Image (tube, rainbow, N blue to C red; front, side, top):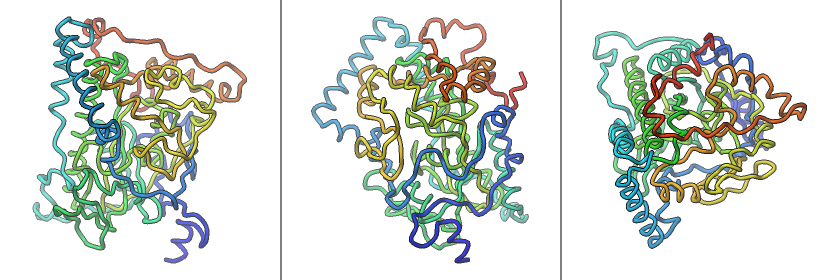
Length: 444
């Protein structure tokens, strides 16, 4: 057992590294379609460095999503909030495209139907004990393949698995989701539980399931507008509907799962997505996948169902982002770094130290949300990895090594697609791009 730990966490006196004990053969993971086979390869370490010794567990409430009032200051927050509300009212009253009543209705309908979340899931599925049968039995490899296929049926795109260790990957699970709320801790118990003071994840729940869902490029391309924000919220509705279904699937197998109690809770989803091989970290400081670029949302949860981990992938994103800078040039707020390479120093308390990144000036991005009364996504929608046309995207990926090596010019920014009126009049359906860009095998 001691030798196994040395192999996984590094020799004594060396920095810890992440090494899963059991790895899922990629042919068993339905995420590996023909496109991924052609562009991505499995690697032992992500392209962006991780300093596990200096990484600390982060609190979700420190993010700009939750703490922007504090980072901005009370007076400035009151002013920008009043400006946002008045601006939204004026634009809807004047019928500004993207802010008309129908656009607001899209945002309202999805923003108010994101399903409720619970640390241990809905808890409604009948367990094998309640059905009078035995819990599911399978090898870790069989279990991962089973979960991946079930998630694809639920509507997920790529699926990955990460093993948890104290010295490394458990640090990616948030210490607190809500300021002053219960802390997430790890204990040697059979089944987790929660009290007003803590949420307990058993140490035997040693695996994280991470998955992605695609977003509509046509919808996000309407940013900034209430319409683009609504299509983002629509993605969250799908993301967390699947989340609850995954909780219940695991419960019905006879096992337990532990996850977010609030939206974007549980842990650092992009980090789990990188370690689990869904995609690579990029200049936007999000994740780029072979199938969807950054045009996706992520979620993750822990489970005691024994699983085989998936490995990180390399597809040349770090090398390409170092030269491209399209997202930085087109960022409306100047939040995205234009540096020659990633660094180790966070831009503010909203970022966790201990990893290499193009750290964003995220409060600039957040302020832009308030000024537009929307969300943004220009950085994602102009990125060459977000090309919606399958033929053009495959050609871009084919040329990627030559572009990175300087043998041919880099790809240009994608043209803007913002035209809310045209979005409403499309005859082929506004979400068609989600189901046609990637069909699992790129057969069409």
